[in-house]
Image 1 (cartoon, rainbow, N blue to C red):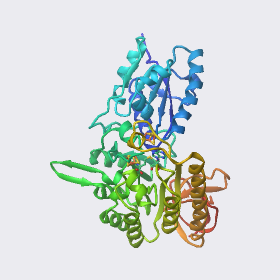
Image 2 (image 1 turned 120 degrees about the vertical axis):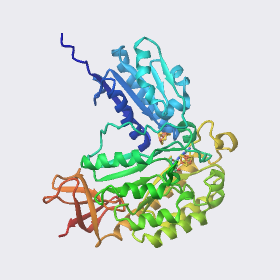
Image 3 (image 1 turned 180 degrees about the vertical axis):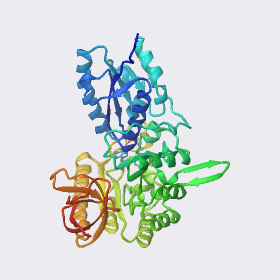
Image 4 (image 1 turned 135 degrees about the vertical axis):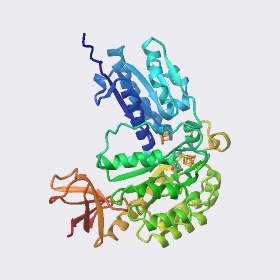
Length: 446
Ligand code: SAH
Ligand code: SF4
Ligand code: F3S
């Protein structure tokens, strides 16, 4: 008798940061090995996984809202398996099953290899929980299934965890200790992607520039790793995120400056422009130190693109502290920023030791001022690019018009230009003639 293996259907929905997106691809790969095929309709799925984020309260509320809809699906189809993955699973552990009784499985970010066993447990009618954190797990040799990317740029996770213990942050609790992945496996993954036609790799971690790998052959730090990945091909662009200001070394800056295919773009979260607030946040640098690093970056990489993360209204933040944030933004001249209102997270150092004492309306007003300034600066920074010529890696046909292509320059700015005979994956020289605050508009030049 010819018994065909029955493929079952897995639907994964991902919230939170790029690292979660990358983890979902690892989970997809682990599930594929036990016969699960990726499916984009939750209504047809045998297993639904929600990969969650805890970074701010509203991130968790978004997940809870979605879980109410998933609960309705489970009512219609009691054989459906529902699992919660990621940072909320890790933060809340078994409390999450008490809160969401219809959920079958809870798995933290370091326990995905256990999923095949956990699925069996659920099939035998029991709930499955594994939220053990690991000091070693990097999923180094698991080849992620790639979905949802454009076939041109991909992410490679190079480290996991974080132990910087910024006082506001849940990540050290949900992701465990910092650990780096074997550089050889990273280069192998980058090479395999390049061979498949990918042209851009982003190396991912909470604090990539503290990457450190040691073995009997010596040490590999982040600048050395960047060089190894950049050596895969001059046609492979290399990016990285996120770097912590405390670890932006001269060596790293010079490495970026001296390699054409290491992009001239740094995402360098500052969080606040006030040294007093930075101290309370335990960021391990001052305003002056940060600004000095920015000067050094600009000196060696004059056309660098810079972006940041900013938190408005952290504990004790005064009006003067807030003004210092605005003035720091002006001095740096960021191209882009991710801006948030401080959200107190249970069990963090700030929640335990400091009062969340900036009233919500003040937080909102400060955030609005920060956003307004950033919008003006983004437009200003884009206007300064009008007339310049950039090398653009084409990613896709423009969402707004079939006649245009969209891609990024080394500085990570999106540029739209007429399609002609170009296609995704091509490098095209484009002259900018116009812009909005979000996009540069140009024409290819011969
Ligand atoms: N590892 C990165 C960022 C991790 S989280 C870094 O250190 O820069 C992404 C951003 O979320 C942070 O940079 C911070 O700006 C923001 N964030 C983290 N915790 C937060 C909180 N409790 N409230 C508001 N924003 C927060
Ligand atoms: Fe959170 Fe700080 Fe670690 Fe970033 S460096 S993940 S903000 S603890
Ligand atoms: Fe969120 Fe966890 Fe990433 S808390 S931001 S998904 S590391």
